[in-house]
Image (cartoon, rainbow, N blue to C red; front, side):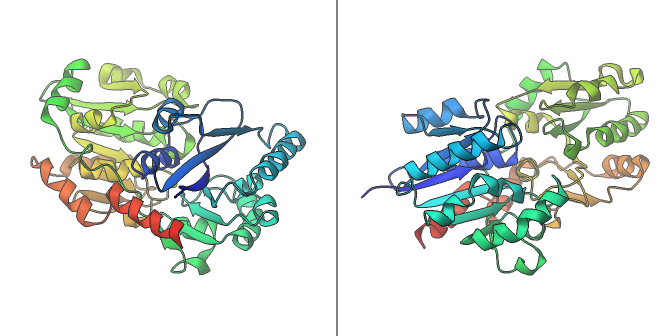
Length: 365
């Protein structure tokens, strides 16, 4: 029996939550039942290109232009692509936080009667105007609505679709994201971090959404109360140089820019707390990973409250003062038994295996 073929739209050149979700759900999928292919817009190679090619043993990518740069030629490329593959795909699975991404699907999914699954991964952001402009058309074209949270449902589809949209948890590889003392020691030694140092960690791209300015200002207050505090930032992005330029001299070597890292689980092990004062999110995968690693996690209240999966998750008003954030962080008791939390994440149905099972139910109907 031939595997069902599913066209994925949402993979980009950046490492982000959507990209991680797509990669995880591919590599844990049953290749005998489902084959994913990926529509890439733009000229840059997507993240995980090598890994996904190796997974299938052949190139699963299809490239078209970018609407923002070459609107007409991109539309022509899409028309040719869908005409050529009109009988090839069982589903189109659009994974995004922006309704305007429908432009890479419409009107072709309707013309060739390829069922469209629209999957919301963000609770806000992008262009509110464009989102509003495309939202009605997206709902009209969509056969099945999926979302990572109620807030993400509201953003992409509208408030009336809360309760009518299937929630697909952003499941993680729990075995991978389990605290490891050896990896903790390796990373801390690599960056000359002593056992006495108190490490605040963050994993995310340097973008406006992730609010690194707030991270720096909160850490500055923590440092004033705890001279042994260090900030370890993992990731790259368009605002990285700007953030480095804003770094006060007084913080000196206390802020570490680790750049892009593949083995993020080792960094979670090295952290003592996880800080995420994002301007907006859906249900961030890094927040789930951090909780699985047994870290006290401090999230802004702009992140969907469903992120709170363990007793280690703390929601703080984004507009609260830096002093307040720092006080919350410094007053939180560090639980030394970090090994108990993966079981809790699994119990809350946030394992990648449960996510795969839920997706298979969607694809089989």
